[in-house]
Length: 112
Image (cartoon, rainbow, N blue to C red; front, side, top):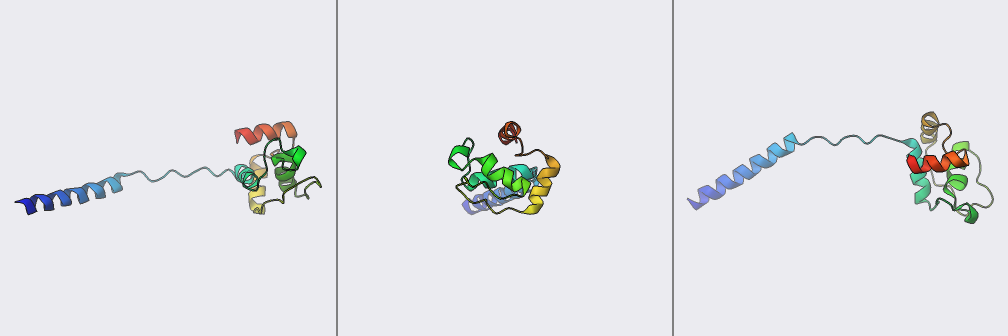
């Protein structure tokens, strides 16, 4: 009797697990934001908001040179992170002004 109860319990647990896996919703795709990817790469490289005076400004020392395809200013204290040029093109399509204007870039950095 005890063996039958244990066997039935195990079978029902396995069946419940299989059903719950089949009914689970697939993960929703995360929207790809190329500008956020550039910002994240700059943050991971050590660039920060309000860091321009010390050469680690996220907009002036990282995002702007990447977006414009120009060298960093001489005051930059950290090298640019590696990035894919295709990501830059996708960011320019999505937000042509990303990182270009100081006021807008700070707003864009906070909202994107």
